[in-house]
Length: 243
Image (cartoon, rainbow, N blue to C red; front, side):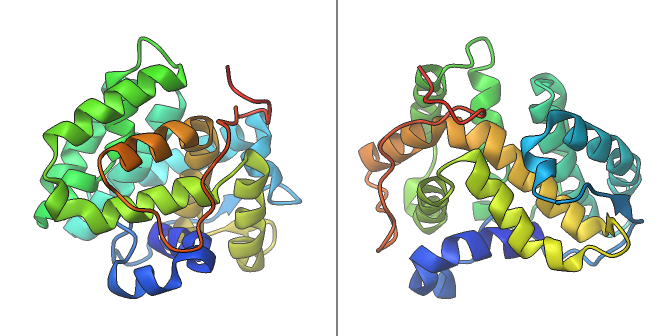
């Protein structure tokens, strides 16, 4: 499963008309390649259990690094993007940006260049302060420097995603629903590995700032998809309300 497919599945229930005209910005059409990677049972645990995800990330990183030098730029770009998310999850923001810049260099679409890894860049800008307020200020600054008339549809998808992923448990449920059926003999392939990393990133790096994302996009005139419920609080990774 490509990352874009998982994003689409999350957003579909609240933004089906939008997705028909505006595919989720984070995925690519890179062909599958790579090995298989052990996952826990139940698979949702990989999102909620730090040790389970760390073991999974360790098993998949080598193949991601190999794929990052693939001759096919579509493959290399997607592998680099997933590596950047892993670096961000480890709070290695300088390394994440270095990796993301390599992915961006392979992106030929101007809109894709603006959107690729946007929240990773925002977190890097705010890395000295992990609070939602710091993220919000950094996000506001980023949006102010972007050509919003070019990326408005993609930002609607981001806003809808932030409204849909209401908690770590919701992220875990999405993995169980979308990746679970693909588990074979306790392992998943590289495309599902990409999706797992994305959803872990969403649980740890988007859920805690979902209110900040929503408010900032609203400030810049980015509408939410019809049917999406506005978040009422920012939820920390452990499920508690963030300060």
